[in-house]
Image 1: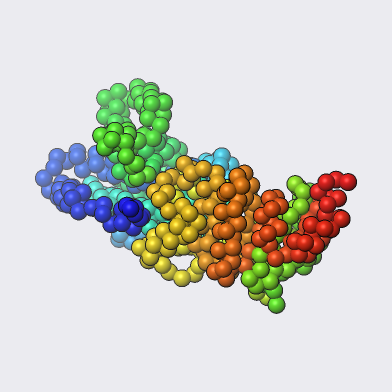
Image 2: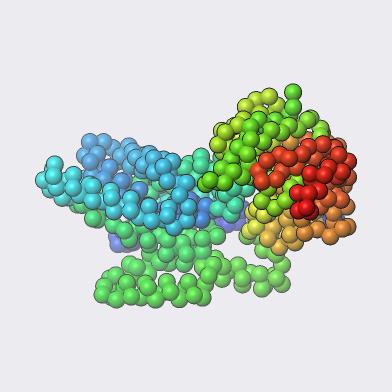
Amino acid sequence: MIQLSWASIRASKSYLIPGIILLVGLIVLAGLPSFGPKYSVIFLSTIFMYIVLTTGWVMFSGPTRQISLATAVFFGIGIYIAAILGKHMPLLVMVLIGGLASSVMALLVGSLTLRLKGVYFTIFTFGLLELIKNAINWYEVTFTGTRGRFVVVVDNNTIYLYMLAITVLTVLTAFLIRRSKYGLALQSIGEQEEAAAHIGINVTLMKVSIFAISAFFMGAAGAVMATRWTYIDPFMAFNMNYSFTPVLMAIFGGVGQLGGVVSGAIIFAYLEQILITKYPFYYMLVFGIVMVVSVLFLPNGLAGVVKNWRARTTGGRYVRT
Amino acid sequence: MFVLEGQGVTKYFGGLAAVSDVDFHVDQGEIVGLIGPNGAGKTTLFGLISAALVPNSGTIRFKGENITGLRPHQICKKGLARTFQSVKVFSDMPVINNVVLGVHFGTSERVKAAQAANEADRLLEFVGLSGRAMVPAKDLTLVNQKLLEVARALATKPEVLLLDEIMAGLNSTEITQAMELVSKIRAQGITIFMIEHVMKAIMSVCDRIMVLDHGKKIAEGTPQEIATSKMVVEVYLGE
């Protein structure tokens, strides 16, 4: 009798070859500032930013199935930390504080609102974005007399390396959580929250923790990216596109698989950069069309296409979900 | 001291008393049946015991300790597990992962992944689901999903197990198997409190039966006493 146990399947799956490829890729990416064209560094930093935001969003919203539109809040808090503290402390410390501040915000918001279900939670997170954006705008106009702030300038290569490091940490964290029992527990919460609680899972703690962890990476990315823009105001920092784009990227790539999420972010970010430079007036239109087509024809995103193809070539055997 | 005990347990939904001033107790190692017409408050009482619902008044004690007001995951960790009348399996997950979760989170001890998988394999075999381990839970039949819920609840190492209508919708062969399963669980030293409509099963498997009607406890006794109680027959047959 063939005994298929969970543990044996996991152990037999080899991460060796993909691991080596990833490592070589990372070394090349880390060396890019010394040999690559100057623009590639700026271009890739933007792609990294989207990978962090999308992976961060999927960390929480993927398994729990609670759609958060607070990504821009956490990203924006990082940006404002950079604007306020950037001149007074080293970049690394500022980035850490940016991440922590976003985490604290997520803890607060999470413990207040994660009881909200479905669309109510989504609307709340969206409302939060508007609230914070306008509150900061009001504060700036009333007390500082100026709307925006200048951010400390950092050279592009440093920004690039920081973003690369944050990206690697984000994806690695998402990967490790997903493989762990906590990843499984988060998935169970998304599927049957009540049953999850009754088999001993502290549902609220789990949701709030993952919300805060994902916010850390978003905030850290915000703190780094702010230094590239040199001038920021509340409407730039808390731009709702940073909430929506990651959702689109994740859906396009396929929320179910981390590889899909990252490729979705890369392809979409690439597309955005190309479109915005070549067709500045039509890029939103093309964006929309791509989105509609992918929702209609690729319900599980790019990862779903790959999975189906693999299932067909292996003779329809059961494929790990 | 009873392993599970309730005093004056009351729950209102709006103005309606779903469970009204119910006293109950379950002894160590017993199988206690809970019966009553539809809407009598049986599942509500289970919800109150497992902390899915908070009682308006009354106390519930587990091994002498007041557990009223604890959260569901705390109740589970104390050793009180349940299944659901409307099945709530994690349907997109492979069957085995449903059980693995129970092993990992049902108790406070840390379990290694391989050990948890072995324990889950063992439990699936115990309920008769070995061979379906890698199938997504939603692909199981309803009967098997109920068995999976039992395995998942057992994975949390309970001392008391609340079974909510695990035999509903089963044919007579399956009912016999389910009755054997209940006896097997008790033989492991687990106390059972079960809601059931299948009279044949409840009469032969239970040591004691409690009857609820309109949220009130109207009778309690051995299966013989209940079967011959005029009041119970009236409630069921509506005379």
